[in-house]
Amino acid sequence: MASVQAFLYDAFTEARFGGNTAGVVLHSGIDHASMAQIAAELNAPTTGFVQALADNTWSIRFFTPSTEIDMCGHVLIGVFSTLSDLGVIPAGNYSVKAVTPAGDLPVAVSRPVEGRPLIEMTQRRPTFRSVTVQKYDICQFLGIRLDDMHPHLPIELVSTGLTHLIIPVRDVSVLSKLRPQFGTLGELSQRLGADTVPVIAMDGLADDVTVRVRDFCPGIGNNEEAASGTTNGATACYLVQHKQLVSGQPTIVVNAEQGVEMGRKSVIVSRLTLSNAGDVQEVTVAGHAVPVMSGTFLTG
Image 1: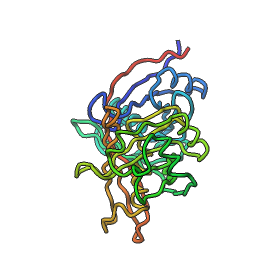
Image 2: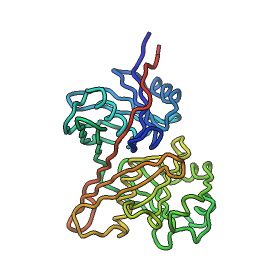
Image 3: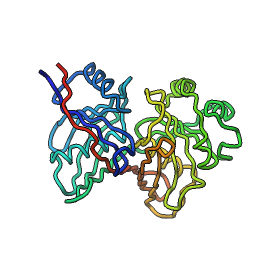
Image 4: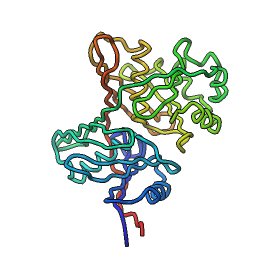
């Protein structure tokens, strides 16, 4: 009977039942329809289908329970944690490559002799696009008031792999009272070409946290995700673009938390390399993942 190895990992956390769950399936050649069926059956927020191509190079395709997407950061963390745990990538520091629908992405895997591997992915340089959308309508969609919105930061589409409609609010207290209309947010996402709708806040956080994120994803089949790699890469770039992170240094580190309101706190670290003019030249996002389940998925 045909079968594939399947795993569940909690990504962007070092504790089980935190972070965002990533499905990981290792295969040597299954078709699109089978991937879609397996992803729907596993029912993780997103599942990565991993096929070895050459030394230190893997093809990865990403499926939510309802659709294929170009890229998923938390799954990438889960995939390379899996390969490290299996000994495919041994202890030490390695540069590997992920071949994805979003392009070829460099990944750094650092595995200590003891402890969890740290996975750091390089994302695309950011693109920014303004949108014509009324703040009043956004407030209706999120169940908040106009004075809950950030007083001057814009609502904007930002992409470092997937496209995110970033909505800034006044402070972290607003995040806990959001009551999103997921159907309407899904329609808005499709109309604007957004994969997800992150709502972000910078005020009211602990000193070691730069930003907190809630990421709504009804457009790709998940109402909310507890940790998102591409979302946080895009969010870090947004904050630099709008002068919220001014250090005078060529590198900026953004410490984000996500999933707090879901009871699955995640920690996502983005690192931005800037040009002399202050433009983002490189985006990396790093995190850990822990195994939750492993087994054999019967496909025949």
